[in-house]
Image (cartoon, rainbow, N blue to C red; front, side):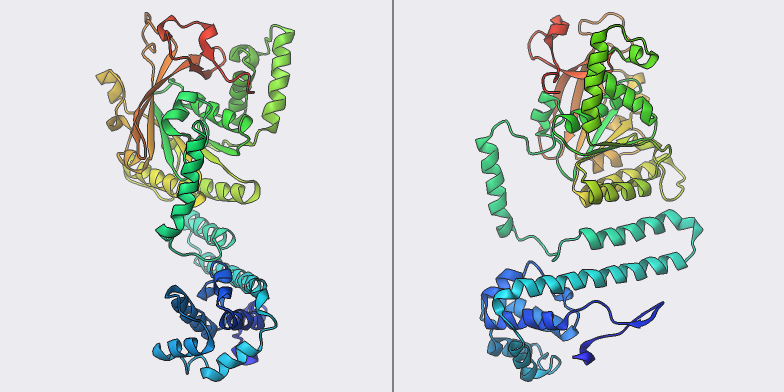
Length: 468
């Protein structure tokens, strides 16, 4: 058996990498003795999981037979390997007979496969460490951020990748899809994605979907940060989800003050200046502090944050505590791994990286974006072409929403403090608009009833206070 083991060179000399040849033989032998054993382990191990090269060859041949629904006994396997001109390479029929005879009990095949897979993960970790070491020896100061990103991504792939990566067969995915659709049909009000806390927005989007890049865009002072914080707060407080907020413009304390004001419904200016006017406001503030303290909201307020750093922190947070939503405020303030001649090229890299992050971690990424000044000079409502610095934002995003307020800059308006949320792009659903009420005193958006918006009064605000 010793001749099957390859040496591994390290700083501590020649070492044998993690492996369990008896377990590998037991897996292969169990499959030859009992065909059902293949069904038990084919989603646990892959050919690469095996340390010994000829065991990889044998398992690949077994997979070929299994896919054709053919027997995987010793005779069938020997014939298959002979057709592939691999029988001599694996040691002939003598070796196949040897591994069959080594099986303690074929009923324990899942246990043997688990050992094989664990050893494979450890070997993958060693390979990743070698890769990281080689990167470090390059000593490239100009590409330090790229090196750090590649190193962390390599390690993250080892700890987070599925045991057996393979294409998803449509036939295998259909039962799960039907079960999900049936559940949605039986529970008409249930959302497919992450609830935002805004009823009409959730109806339009069916929540924020995993792996989606969602853009909220508006001119300054329209409420981009407020809307994003409201979504973060309600998603975490009401629905107990984990949210990370990368704030490149405001400090963590400013964000906390805003969330406290919105949660407690205490005047934001009075809160910041310590001018609380009643015991009732103190009581509301204490209750809000308790609820926000339990919320899984994580804030990173480093200015000029880079996509490399955001990826690293997000990966780590998901691995350690779980992660359901990433918020970036805002996109144009992010830095890239290299210097670009134009802001357009820089924003292109950022938007593509954010979409890549959403897919990699399988969570929605909500990114805020500025609009170009063209919308001010032109007048009217914003369009997709108004997205500042790059058309790639429109291309990469799954959802693009604009905040539009007619009362901004106009003194006499029939509907004051009414914000239109214009959903101009929705890759997998309808576009349209919803309306929210903007409460300037507490710096928060609130749900509106459908009827008589022009006759708005405070009693018509449908906030989520009862749910908080």
